[in-house]
Length: 135
Image 1 (tube, rainbow, N blue to C red):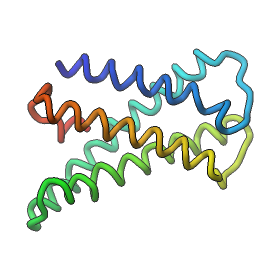
Image 2 (cartoon, rainbow, N blue to C red):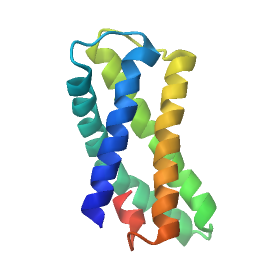
Image 3 (cartoon, rainbow, N blue to C red):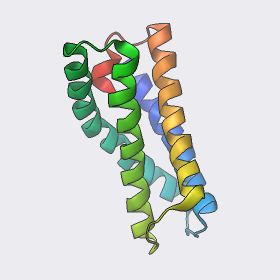
Image 4 (cartoon, rainbow, N blue to C red):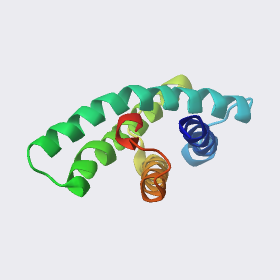
């Protein structure tokens, strides 16, 4: 089931990265290739960030917080910074510089929202036994 989750995340990231040029007002020569590249980078950032978020989650749990506040303070906030890193890298690659403005914040919110929705769907269906490690 984990390979399917990775594939689903990649496809969702691809669609989100496809939105970036239009939402952030820049042009790319080959939109599918652009989206593929940045979806891959986002997936790698997520794998590395997931390890840090897992430890933050475990630390919060160890200190007595319940699941929901622990998730919000580790994974939900962590997701924002993962997407922010990808956004800054995208902007630098096309010669734009932050600040990212309202459209950039909307793009970040879409990315974070999709991540949280997918996490919830997987947790509620029990599709992956230990989603906390993979997230």
